[in-house]
Image (cartoon, rainbow, N blue to C red):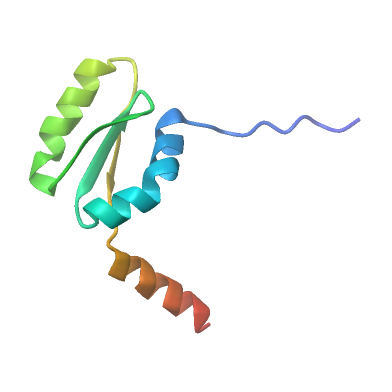
Length: 85
């Protein structure tokens, strides 16, 4: 008998994954705050605290995801360093 495999899934992580390419293309270098499986805000690092407060107010039972959005150049740099190994 095989053990049942349980996968971790978080709505905020899934939202970030689904919108990653769009976020990088349109908002690289900024920060994103996600709560309740939806993007609450995108902005510069100075706005993270305000966006986090907005997320907690809208979704008090959720822990918001706060993440920097890489730029296209940063992603290309990482990919090229992996390719040269």
